[in-house]
Length: 149
Image (cartoon, rainbow, N blue to C red; front, side):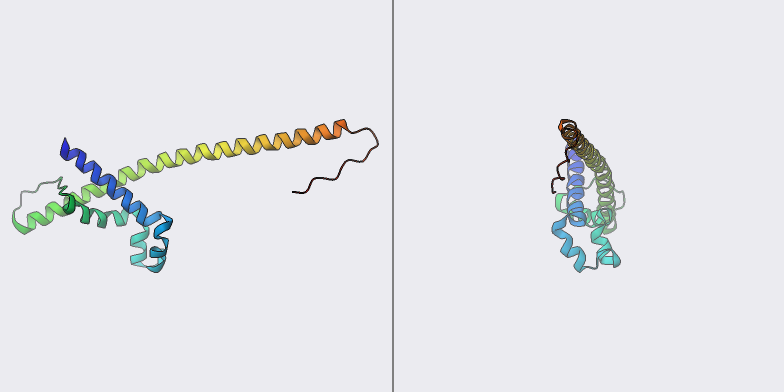
């Protein structure tokens, strides 16, 4: 159970670090300096999935999160264990990224809906005020000039 928790925790960290490096404004100068998405290296640091591989390759041995055991011994077995465990962490991090994307999109949808409702309410108030001004004006008098924005 502890190994499973560690696997998911390291995957969440990989997802967070790779998302921050690839998408957040704080690392935009680094991405631009490396050529943005126009160069191979720039694309590597602009793609959260791509960079998550390298983050996982570094974090798996640092945390000892070897979730996959191999039967081959020696240095080849160690390399395969590291490589396959890193790939597993990357795949789990990708699933986390999708879940968080859906959560973020749903929150964005709620914010956009609230903004639209507020704009509609403000427009209705303005229209009501305009109609009330016209109705309350005596016949034959000139309407006041529109208010400046």
